[in-house]
Image: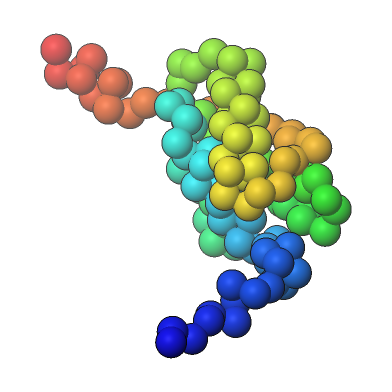
Length: 126
């Protein structure tokens, strides 16, 4: 006679909880923001001293619907308003998918606009 697995007898809703720490959510948001074409990794002037970089996120996972702020750098030229909407939408979707919690607010701020140096080099050589 086969033994029953004790987990099969427990209602899935009573098995425990999953706690997603702010730091894990911050990392998710920063990586997800980089998925959007036009968002680039960058170091700000202060960032070169502190080691901070863009994108940079602040996430509060304590409420049922987390609050998120993400600061980004974008490549020049970029349609900034459209890019911010794309980042917001992608962050909401991926945070909901990966954490199971739908953010109530996602604020996106463009902190830096970075020139596309590859395009400039190509233009000079041509």
